[in-house]
Length: 398
Ligand code: FEO
Image (cartoon, rainbow, N blue to C red; front, side):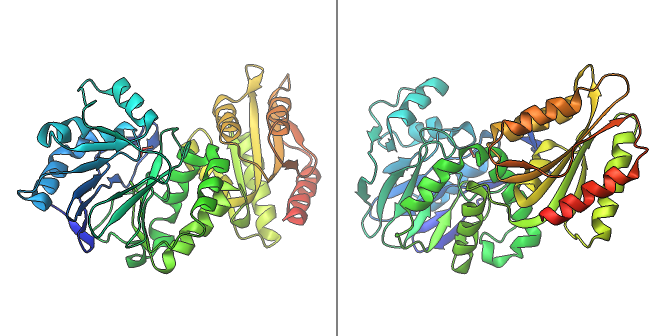
């Protein structure tokens, strides 16, 4: 059965959810599934904005047939050429052979790399800010390179002020009936997953996101339609724009401390738990403790984007940083995380390596300020005073 929603006169959401999927990009856990959004405009001309993942093709094609009825499809806009949105392009072209497929030079280059159907006679290449009229609605295309792929563009519908934003402003998590962010308690329901999505998928490209935010600063935007997650409208638009401004400029949202540890036998873990209690006794409320061997790094990274301070504690393993901690640090570096206050704790039994390794990586990162004196434990911590001093240094730095 079709499942569509008219989000504005003549503009329909024709997407769907996948709640069975375990991991996004086969990497990031999806405990609440994910939504693949696509939008269909039925003006004098018809235009479909992006397609969806192969996992929901059946419902998706039924949705389109339902909305179009006997009409043909005039345009298919490809804002993003990643397969979770492109799996149905070939089928759409087969069903509507006269459709004009709108993209840019890189869009069509990537299409040829992924798919084999010859769509050269369908391709309509557009440049930045080029417009196409559908009747009452007019689409204007904005290039948004590296948010988070090079071919990404966004489509702005002028008459209604609707921005079809590709992956930007999206989220992990399936949609449960309510399509709009203002219809749910977003902070408790979606925000953590929106942050985890942004920080892990787009986080590296803060500079490019800032460029896009500036590009749209003077445009009247009444609705933002992402390819994942809920639709933004009304007051919620400034809410998500402010979040994106913070995340993409690597500024913390809140004062708080994320403590991540890698511990084989519980000794490093014990020190971190003791430090967390000392911080709590000083009145710090936002404290998050994570075992890097247990919690997927995407959650830890998301909280490191959220909070001002980080404590990294790692055993030495084979004369290296404990491997899951090493992976977390490398991901943080790749994602260009900056402007954080970091405290370091190493542990070793006969040869110290973790603290040195962590210090080198942290020193290579932008605006990472080391707070307190790094502690290098020999198996277990005997001198509680050094932990008191570190807790005080973290408290004073907040
Ligand atoms: Fe949802 Fe970058 O694909």
